[in-house]
Image (cartoon, rainbow, N blue to C red; front, side, top):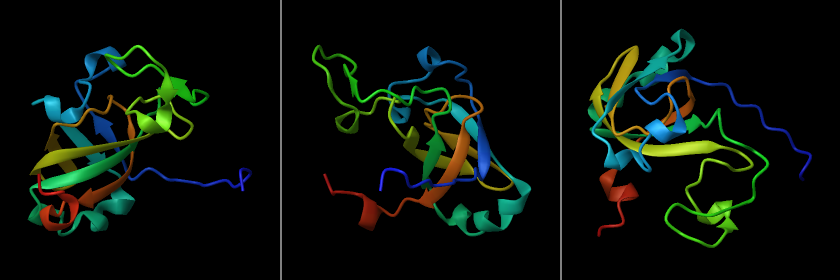
Length: 137
């Protein structure tokens, strides 16, 4: 199974004030910065209805991350752990996930709280449903 190849096409690109990893917050929810997601023209129909939501999940490709790292020292810790037990960007398949506030919807989505670096390819967007996605605490 390890020789299986998956092909993902970006649906848009992030325009963000964060140019380097050191510019970005540890997690998007710790930032009040606004970013834009520029949706590619062939995917604009997929945005229809997104304006009904106050928050969305953005899945993006951590395009500057290392892909050959399996163990890291998490921020603020001393001992190495497997990357699957961390939020580290370095990982075999560097997919970022961030819950953001949707401020404006159209060809360009204006969002608050996205931790993606400028130029990050967006691979999917999903609405946040409080009754499904919240653990209630």
